[in-house]
Length: 267
Image: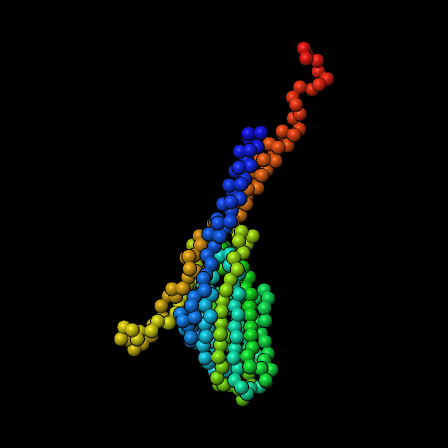
């Protein structure tokens, strides 16, 4: 029975360690203050405004323009993009759409969410949402799976009436994600994040008049994950200990008291 007690203690210790280990295995973005959130949007992939997960970014634009933002997403995360468009007081019915692209400019499908919505003529705003598939740590070259790296959000109106072209609109966008844990883990990992992205850097602070393209510096708050660790390791270890415990317990129950009662003592 000492072996049973030892294995029980090991199971308890592993159970206590499971929660913090799983929590530390995947980065999560903490919301930033509204004062730090961007107030402009880019007009192309190259000029996309960088935002962190948890930030609520705002921008003013004209109906018919393309508005772009970029954000980082790591393995094990399931990003959700939410956008709100504030429309002018008078306008015709308008259809707005939000699209998400990965670092290779591949459009990523939404699992669910109102990716396209039509606002009635008397509507003051329209809300859009796109829940992406879980970002994978590794994928086949021919697959279109979302991979760790920079993602781009494009917000625009489609089939816009001519009378509404150029009308001033306001946009709000926020990106969050859910950590899917070991259930979404796969073997393998990328050596580098998928195309870290390109951003536009202003030279105003350095006395320069032009703007140059530089590599994007956005990344998850805790850095990019290595891709090999997930809470599956913890639960696999717990499963192995429980299997050993079941084997010891089954042996203790089935072996009996040792010497059968029907055998004479002198035999």
